[in-house]
Image 1: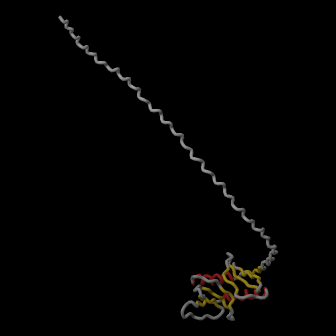
Image 2 (image 1 turned 90 degrees about the vertical axis):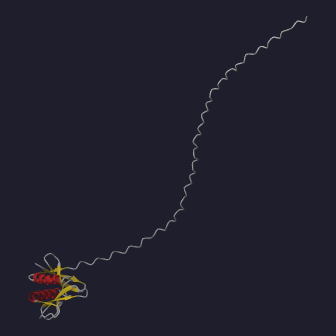
Image 3 (image 1 turned 90 degrees about the horizontal axis):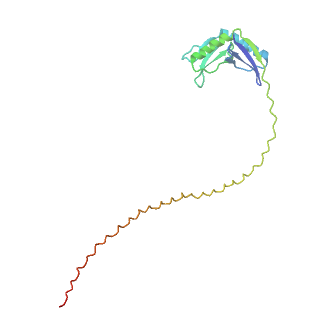
Length: 199
């Protein structure tokens, strides 16, 4: 079962028809000065919805229907919408926009179903929030000048360590070969001179 929810606002009272699942089916098209006036409008809506026929203005050469009636039309964005008009032709309710015609037709069926025997609930307007006390603007601390960045002392490159020169191993001298003693050729004995005795 649906319900009519009357809400208070700065402009006055307005109401929505909600389905059992809480979704808004359609909304009243006016603001009312008193709760009694809003409830009377709800009663008019219920009677009009129960007796209304559908006039589909999206069809070419559509047939006009006498009030009360639901009018299906397209808005500037080519979305399908419907409105409920009372006996005097006054608009009692308007729908949201639907992409498909079938969705608008289902919306009308939902209005008829949920309007019948719907309860009326008055919701109090939410209390206006008190403006938060203005806080004194926080004083901005003077910007500290950034200390010049200290340059890290350049590290002296450690002298490259020279690999200790490898001492060349002393060349091994080949042991001097002792010269073989020269063989002396045997001295030739000179032939003894024969001395001739003088006679």
